[in-house]
Amino acid sequence: MADFVSRFERSWQLIKASRDVLRADSALLILPAVSGVATTAIAAGFITLAVSNGAFEATRHGAALEDKTPFYAWLFAWYVVQYFVVIFFNTALVGAAIELLAGGRPTVGDALRLALGRIGAILGYAVISATVGVLLRALAERLGFVGRLIESMLGLAWTAATFLVVPILAAENIGPWDAITRSTALLRKTWGESLIGSAGISLVMSLVIAAVAAVGIGGGVLLFQVNRVVGVAMVAAAVVAILLVILFTAALSAIYAAAVYCYAVSGKPPGAFDGELIRAAFTRKGA
View 1 (cartoon, helix red, strand yellow):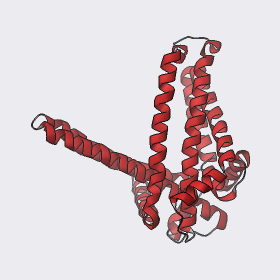
View 2 (cartoon, helix red, strand yellow; view 1 turned 30 degrees about the vertical axis):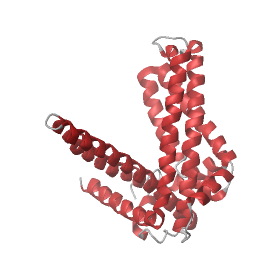
View 3 (cartoon, one colour; view 1 turned 135 degrees about the horizontal axis):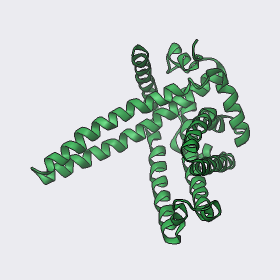
View 4 (cartoon, helix red, strand yellow; view 1 turned 180 degrees about the vertical axis):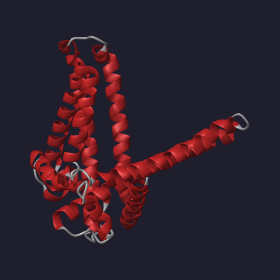
């Protein structure tokens, strides 16, 4: 329990430190906003395509692997496009965060130009990520419960190994395979502990979203029985608030990833982050 409280407190401190960096240029929130709109539109387009050409029919229980080829082709294409958009805007955001941590004042235009300069590596990493995603999905479907268990374990290992790929793509302008190798090398000493900060930020903000949903949406539904206008307005306000929290979380996570990368490379915590706070992300398990 004490360890949980300690990690929660550290996560809250990371949120405040990342927020202080974001204050230097809150316009960067535009990047995750555009990414969210784009990925939603892409998902809607691909789902419409799958329904219209019958790709979903290939997912029926017991279908042979060759019968699912259209579905996996659709899934791979969706993953590539979706990952490309997400990685592109994340590279722009993290690149801007690295510059902010170094004392610069990047603009949204600067961030987008940086990502455009890495577009080949971003596309390559999107293809690699999509391939991994499809293979894990196929494995889970073929092996049932055991496959899903293996998928979860390998998925977690992949997430840990690639945690710093986006900051590396943004800062070092190297190819996707080299970025994955370098990310693994930088994080090998941490045994995944550097993911605690990112997971902690997501956990805290998820609790905030749950509270807003419970009060805003739940309260709005109850009020709807009494006053429809007030009830709808309350639900709408809660949905807007949740979307803003999601954008804020994406920006904070990008700043934290940038801070971890800067520390991993230089051995010095960025000025906006407390030394002990960022060093705690690089503590070996059992140390």
